[in-house]
Image 1 (cartoon, rainbow, N blue to C red):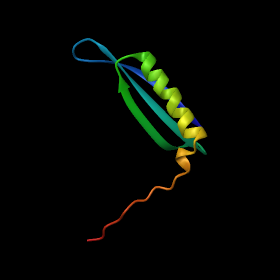
Image 2 (spheres, helix red, strand yellow):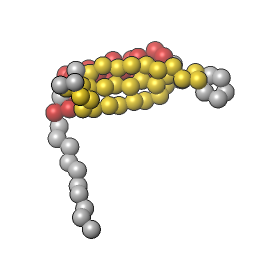
Image 3 (cartoon, rainbow, N blue to C red):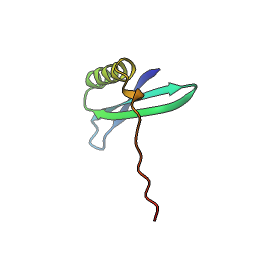
Length: 72
């Protein structure tokens, strides 16, 4: 199940940015995590919603990842 969280962060200049973190859990363990920073909260929320839908409905997580191992 995918969910997202938005964190408000203060910059050195005094302005705020918003970090949206999307997590996918399976059997109580995090199996995927994405995050992206935005200047507006609404943009961060829209990205989080769209990313959750993408991960859940389109089967993005069903793809197998290939990791190359090099033995020296």
